[in-house]
Length: 398
View 1 (cartoon, helix red, strand yellow):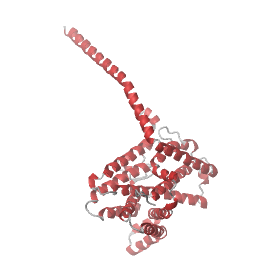
View 2 (cartoon, helix red, strand yellow; view 1 turned 45 degrees about the vertical axis):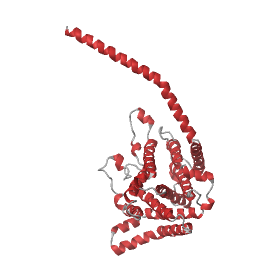
View 3 (cartoon, helix red, strand yellow; view 1 turned 60 degrees about the vertical axis):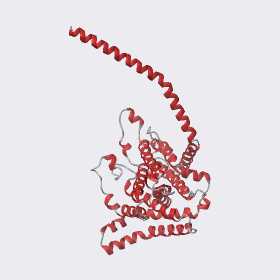
View 4 (cartoon, one colour; view 1 turned 180 degrees about the vertical axis):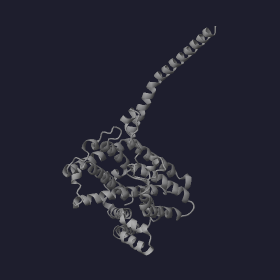
């Protein structure tokens, strides 16, 4: 469904689904007793599989919506206002990513814990947005096909060469930089290969923008996504085996042994296809608002579950201690609570920001007399100290 503003509501629906999947996934994975993580259980394996779909879908949807907005309109190059907004957004995500891992209690004793330097989803998406802006700025004016070609090439290269760079420690870099490329130090997400999902989302956005007024956009897009996605899920592994036998290139066989990136890309395409197919039924206002509030939801969930700033969260008290029934009920309540708080914040964001700003100005004005008094007192003290030293110097001299 497209409104008069050409907003693609199915993307908001995808983001809403992905963030809700993330909430329950983080809650269950962190609080479920390992005794119940039974690999032979069909229910657990289904849950585990769909949990694995969440991050690729979210990264792809983020790349899609950002690129779609970036190329919207007729302004290209440095004059495009979306470049400035996108750069600010990317840096903001990176800053919030570090802020959420900051422990204020540790700062009080002058210590920054190692967890602060761990790279997570916000850092990775932030750098991905900056990467897309850089590629757009370098290629947009040179060729109509250069930008999409680069996006596709990056996705394929990052996914194809994962067996090689995943073994690298990047020890030649400082740890806080190496964490963007390797999981050795505890990073959850890294630029390689997750940037590949973002660039793929950008590629889909370019195609949507090019054919946005085509009569059969959705029928063709739905059929293409679902058929290509199913092809990647069921046939990409056998294809890599055949390529290895035909070419003798060992890389293809290594990809086959751990072919999660291309299979997950297939999951992403099928998910996009299903949501486009059901787009007319996914217009619930609350559900779509959840898709527009993913950053607020992520921040609130991090504070409640992992105890950002204080280290006191549900994870600290209930880590790997709940049975399946308790964790299922808890996940539902956790998702409801987190999204409700986020939606209330988004609804009253302007009012809250005004209150904070007014409070800040009031405190600043209130402190001004004290600042002036302190400055004058210090000034008098320095003058008297200077006069005392001069008298002392004269006495010693005489």
